[in-house]
Length: 130
Image (cartoon, rainbow, N blue to C red; front, side):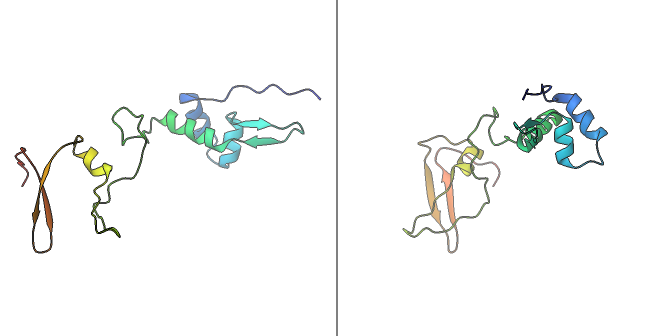
């Protein structure tokens, strides 16, 4: 049985144009029409939906890795601006907050306790937003 030759998948504007052209088709049909499939020995086409969707995202210029300034970060959690006291009674302020503020390891803070709040004030830094 001879293996059929498959054209390379569409990318960039050609991909976007083809997807728009097939607007009334299923996403699986769009992926196949754009070349995002593999063919088994039995001639069955298996759609590679992740490659198709990633290529479409790239073609549209959508940036999903915005947590990192150079687009090559580890990702991680986004800041929810809520934390809980842990089982060991510690409060952990995650990397999402410290990165957002541009803090470096070793940056020192003064802890100011209020009646129902805790304020962290960076030592040697005048905050102009208060």
